[in-house]
Image (cartoon, rainbow, N blue to C red; front, side, top):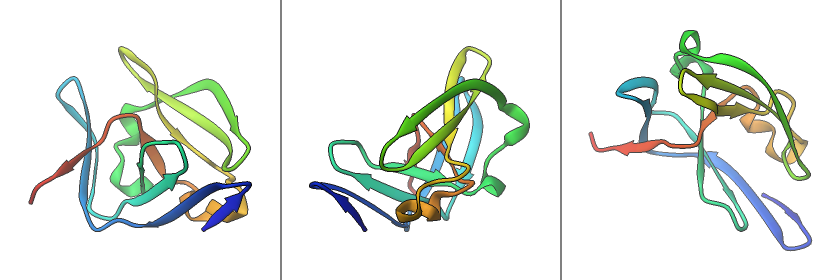
Length: 111
C-alpha cells in the first residue's frame, strides 16, 4: 500500500474473471488480473500481457504522467483512440502493474 498525503493506492491479485470487449471483439480475457484501488478513482483491473490480444492494439503517441504511478503509454484500436494503457516503468509502490495492460472498460464475467 502506498500513501502520500492521504492518497492511497493498493495493488493486489483479484479473484475474478475479467474481459475487455470493443465493438463485439474480445481484446483481453483474464482470470488473473491485478486490481488497483486508488483514492478518488474507480477500481482498475491490470491484465498480464499474455491475456491481452496485443496484435489488435496499435501503439499511440499519447503519454501521460501520474505523480503516484509514473508515466503511462497508450494503445488504440480502430474507432477507439487510447483505449488501453500501461506503465512500462511504474513507481516502486505500484511496481506490480509493470507490463500489465489496463482498459477503460472491463467487465467481470460470471463463470
